[in-house]
Picture 1: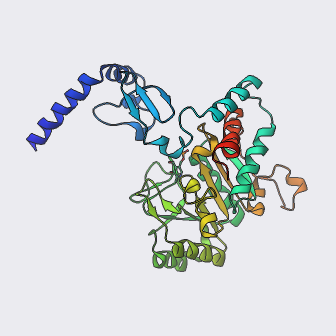
Picture 2: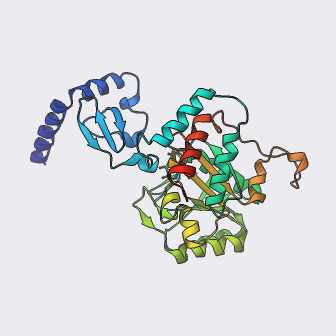
Length: 327
Ligand SMILES: Cc1ncc(COP(=O)(O)O)c(C=O)c1O
């Protein structure tokens, strides 16, 4: 044990000696940010490297080292750091002005591109992150079904307030969760038998992502579809990570399994802050502000968000799906 500690200390000293500017930047950050950090996953010991600039698939740290970027910002960086089409779209949008505080045409443009690509999405709404997309998708499911229980899977991750890597986490949004086992239809059936019609939603990653990149068996995902329909629950595919896997239309298009709601994020915003949730028109109409003129009785549910339709994301995302990662 002592030898391991000594070896670690020697390597940590070498790392610090080789990265003095990152160390200095980190020391400054610790004065204002807890642990010098504002996004947990980016931290590592003895201190994280600080990026100075990025181009294409390369990163340069503040000490001048050049790295090949194999992380791709956890799939949000699919287009690379300086794709000319994306940069041009952002620059053109910048010239037209920021933060309109009003509708603008690029939001419908991106929505149409998403609708064309994901078979389960008839109507879509935008958020600022995948986490928010989960938040609003679950709210829609609960309101639509007038039920409260949410089936999740051990090992799953649906954003900062939805961690199920080893049971529910105290940071989670306090829904009434039922924890099933991934790729295990018997565990799903057991919970359904016990909770029957109390289940508002079944939310699943078609491939468990940060929990270990475990693909969902097609029969398992099809079983979830069948059971959700049977009990009248909303099936939510969290395709924040899988949306570009297998096919440009996510796992749903590849397998021909249509969820009721899909959540999206990452690269679809062209590398800018982004999230979206979309699905069947009757469920999504929960958020239709024209309450009085829709078939739904009663008021529509509000969905706020200053930056839901922010001009840079809408422009970068549209350019990405239209011209870079085209069908
Ligand atoms: C499957 C899945 N869902 C949701 C999220 C949350 O997205 P965001 O980080 O944009 O909040 C992530 C992020 O990694 C994810 O992998």
